[in-house]
Each structure stands twice: as C-alpha cells, then as structure tokens.
Length: 459
Ligand SMILES: Cc1cc2nc3c(=O)[nH]c(=O)nc-3n(C[C@H](O)[C@H](O)[C@H](O)COP(=O)(O)O)c2cc1C
Image (tube, rainbow, N blue to C red; front, side):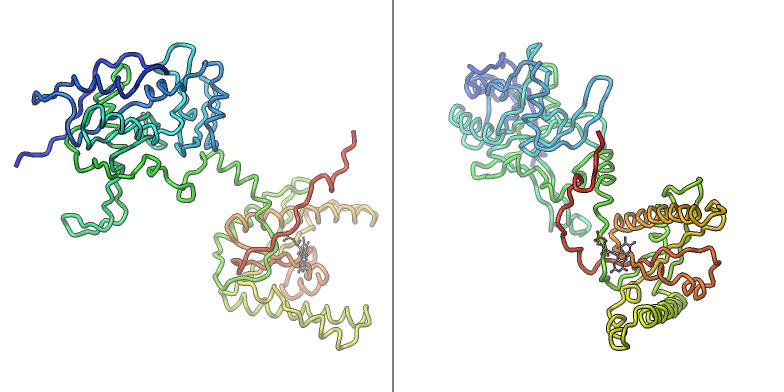
C-alpha cells in the first residue's frame, strides 16, 4: 500500500475577474489544463478547489471606491471588537455580519485596482455552493469540494493565514471527540478545523502576489461528499462560547463603566465563605477613595462566621446595639413593649451574613479642629462624606467579584455602644455595618433613573 500523499497545485491562467465574468467558466477552463506531477490532467473525483474570496467578490461586484472604505467597513460590521489608532490610521477589528472577526471587516485594498477596495462576498457559503454546483457540471465530476478562502490575523500569533469563509461539498471539521489515541487516552476536545487547514495549505501553493487565486487539493477524498451539508459558517464560534468577545482595552473600559451599576443591596446570602484576600481587595478599593486634607481616615472591623471569635463578638455587638435601640424606642419614642418587640423581631441581615464589615472614620488626627461647634460640625460632615465614598468603593469592588452586600445604618445610631463593645478609641465614628456574602438571588430590577431628574444645569 502506498503512503497517502496530499498534493496541492496552483491553477495558472485565470485572467482579471470582474462583474461580467462567468466565474464557473473561467475556473473550469483553467483547471482543465492543470497537469499534475503524475502526468494526469484536470480534476478528478474527490478533488477540492480552493478559490480566494478576492475573485469571488470581484465577480459579485463587491468593489467600491477607496473613498468609501470607512463606510464599507461600517456596513459590514455587526460588532466592534477592538479599535486602535495606529500611525497608519485607525485599525478596527470587528465581527462582520457573517460572524467573522477580522481587521477592517475584510474590506481590502490588495490585489485590486488602485483607488478601489473590495468587500467580502455577501454570503460566501452560498457563493461556494453555486461554484460547486457549476464546477461539478462543467467538469463532469460529481464529487468535488469547494472552499472560498480569505486571510485572517490570529490574536496570539504573528502573521496571517488563510481560512475558509465559504464551503460546499466538503466536511469543514473532523471531530475526534470520543476517539482514543494510540495510548488509550480519550480525546475530549479535539475538533480539527480541516477547512481552515486546507485554506492555509492552499495559500502556500497559490501565494499572495502571484495572481494564482485558485488551487486544487488532491488526496483528501474522505472529506468530500455531495451529501455534505457542512458550511464555513459552522466554523464560526457562537458568541455565547466566545471568551474573547472584546479586545482587552475595550473589555477593561466596559468593566469600568459597568462597575457602579453592578452594586445593588443584597440581603440574602448563600453559606459560601468570602475569602479574606477578596475582602482585603475590596478594602484596598475603599482606601483609594478621596478624603479631605490628603488624609486616610478610614478603618474597618471585619467579623467572619468562619472563626469562633468573629461569630461570638458579632453576636455580642449586635445584642448590645439592639439593647440600645430598645432603650431609645422605649425612652425617647414611648413605644409600648409589644411594639418594641415587633420592631426588633425583624430578621437582621447583619446577624446572618457570612461576613460583616464595620467601617469607621478615625477623625482624631484627620479632622481640623475649630474653636466653634458650627465649623466643627461642618468638618465632621466633610469626613462623613469621605466615609461614604470609601464605603461605596468597597461595595463596588465586592460586586465586581460577584459578592453581594447590604449597608445597614444601625451602628451610626449607637456609636458609644459600638466603641465600647469593640474596645475602640473615642474618635472612631461608626459608618454603619455591611453584610457581605454571595447573593442567594440577584437583586430585583428597579425602575431606571434618569440623570436629568437629579440635575440642575445652570447655563
Ligand atoms: C448609608 C446607607 C444606610 C442604609 N441603611 C440601611 C438599613 O439600615 N437597613 C436596610 O435594610 N437598608 C439600608 N440601606 C439600603 C437602602 O435602604 C436601600 O435598600 C438601597 O439603597 C436600595 O438600593 P440598591 O439596591 O441600589 O442598593 C442603606 C443604604 C445606605 C446608603
């Protein structure tokens, strides 16, 4: 048995193609004259004809004036993946309406008359199907595969390679999943993109600048079948499975823009623990907030359910805070014992959360002193605002990690109790308590807020 050889020949003699050309006739005439190393001529059953998208686009009148290039890219773009300003102009990596992710939506100025650009075929699989039908009849070969190829860059590799953007009469992948290798290892992920491999190989024989837009591949009859319903569109990874939908800079920008909107008050948590490094990361975000006089007045007490100390101190603190609350309801609000019992019976998110963080302002060294109570009060307000900025940063950072939070006021109403329970200095001002944990369910949608409703623009 002779070893299997795959042969690829470039097809010479195809002239300039335009909208008036009969592409099937041009390709058929040229391939009939091809002489193979073994002396055979033309095509035979099982051959694959690879055609560059250039001549398909030219035959389909996809040529435009170069002045219309940007508009052409816009018209072919379904989604922008990445944009960069480069010395040569703006580079746009986009997903086309076909689903191809490529520079400039495949709008290309090479191998075209100067002053013109070429768009990809509107439906390359349909173009491939028509070429395949036409060539099968013209060449009288029932088992013929057709690929339409174009040049793509690769995100992690230098250089470009051709891939299949249209296919007919040929399998586009070989799925090895479920098969075993020589060592008995089961393959679980390997799907060879054979149509792309063939497109890359065809380009080797055709070349980029040698005006050989058609090649014939022989030796892979097993991939060719008139019954094949595979198309190059099958090679487009569905968006939901695409881990790299956006360029890195675009993804970061999007993440920064979305960050504040991710935070919502979450009051029910799963039992999953929240790791200390994750909490510290959120506290790092908190202490990057602005504060008056270039100070860093924020302090945080963290109590996790993971430790016995954290659990016990939390219960003791919350019990003491509740005592004070009950005293206030009784002595200041004249609530009856029944209504007090009803008020305090409500579930307490700070008791149940996997972690609570009590944020404080340490005002002693930070706040300026004034001889009068009026300005001392304003100075305190100033720091309270900075405390809010830090807590919001904390909550946004937690939300970015998928961690929910509820900012609860209670400690603000009983600062002495909190300081005494936690043995804190007198200048620590509580800013509430934050329940932290992984959300049991997402926050309910709420009506959108219109910025204009909150703004007075003075013109
Ligand atoms: C400073 C502050 C104190 C809050 N105190 C409480 C509280 O004591 N109890 C409570 O259930 N929610 C409290 N919240 C949450 C709000 O009442 C409200 O639920 C929240 O802002 C809802 O919007 P969100 O989902 O965007 O967070 C507080 C919020 C802030 C900013």
